[in-house]
Image 1: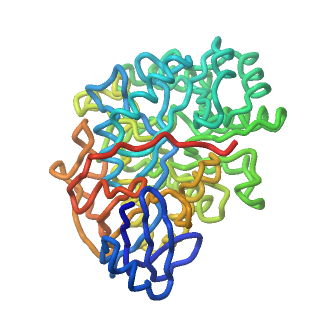
Image 2 (image 1 turned 180 degrees about the horizontal axis):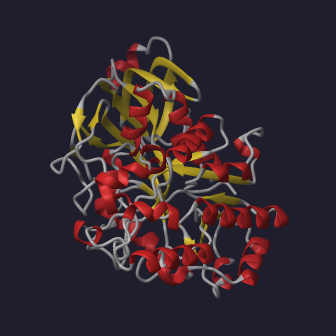
Length: 448
């Protein structure tokens, strides 16, 4: 069995940063050395000199839209998993609003086949809820599927679940993690009507946060949390975008004991209302980017552990689609290649520790979703690892963007850390801009 030794890296893992070496045998971390490495191992292993570099577990992104099947002019599983790997993301969980939508067991199985054939990263796929597919949802294997996705807000056409009886039954009967997109559709419709009456089709994108308001998010998130408490459901509220929603969650119990968890996405930490002036519909997301106060509140929630996970909601559209007028421009943007780099910029500015970034992007998703043997640098775990040079300056540009859509809201931003290598199941898939695509990722397994 091939042996690889990542030698003399600064290992950041489980709240500690220490210089050491990690031995990989096959797919697994077989040993961690915090002192001298035995000479026989130095002689027998492929030694990677990591002095001056930081080694962290691979990032686990629990919310991406890779657009396959049916929307592959925007993105596909191969292209976006490649971008993810270049950004230090070793595992992803992909959403069901493709074409066709992933709302049956057969369609879910087809998604997993696509993942096995095409994905460079490890993968799982959500099954999507509708108003009438509860029988399909209850057939889902909790050990092999990350969760059920409920759109409690019309972000994705006819996948809106707005039947109260259906919601009650899903929360009551599901043994699987339920992940929710929370925005109240009635409030959004009323706000849209008001702005349309005033501006017609010439609504400016700067009003997006007022239309898809904090009130709409809070009302819908409250409903989800109340249902989860009523039935003791396992709930994960996706992409919090307002500070007020933090009132609904606890930070005084360990993550492993929480039945109700949540996440924040990188764009809600990075951008704010004023950025619509320069970036326009390129930063039109659902839920919307909101006020400076919301951004500050979300960051505080991240630091005090009211927020559990950092994700991306990576959702690419073409430049042409995003260039439409506000009402016609689709919501969503590409992020998965740059999420870790963006968080490392916050670290450089002393806003968050490197250990806390690792906790929220690597450890916490593994804990919250009960992922088997991933998300940590531990003996016996899969060797999903990322080497980072925290002293490497570079600029995001079209020349180094790997998304199929070819653009990023971070274009022109100077980053000060660079992903050097990404290992997935012990295989170095990415190294200094080059890819070794001899192996594909694996389907995630869940300890449930």
